[in-house]
Length: 185
Image (cartoon, rainbow, N blue to C red; front, top):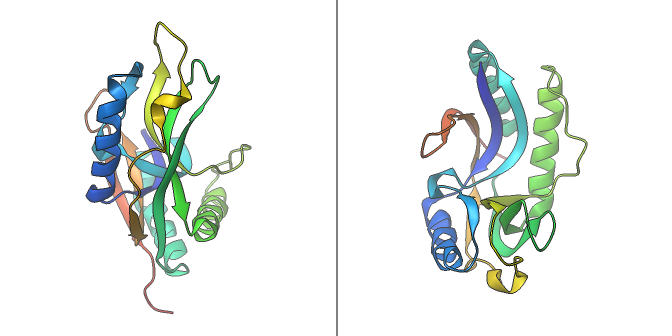
């Protein structure tokens, strides 16, 4: 069984901007786990434990979805936390740009994966890039520490990927399938 999810992978220059921001944060915010820069991504759908032999058919289905979508632009925008403000579970970098195109892509993925028996999450889609997990500071976390987030940068979303999680490895996420968005419209 492989633990799989579908995501938008970030270009290295975007990951570098986030990494630069988190280097400063590490001195002021004690999170139990900082995400490895090569693992930064925007999750479209978590699939969970899946038999390895299904990777090819899932990749094929994602490629069908991708053919119906054209590339779009996203950007780093803002930052925040999930969980209690004084002791957050997740520290994230925010996403701006064509959020409608991102939401439509996410909905298409969820709809297509549902036909394979994957249940959609009940939570609303909140695109973000997780950078830290489980605050464990001695003093309550202060939102002042995160400022405006990483330095803004824009990029083209040209593909989505199927990732396998390799627990206890760095980087933890391995690409097992790629679906390029269509450039023919």
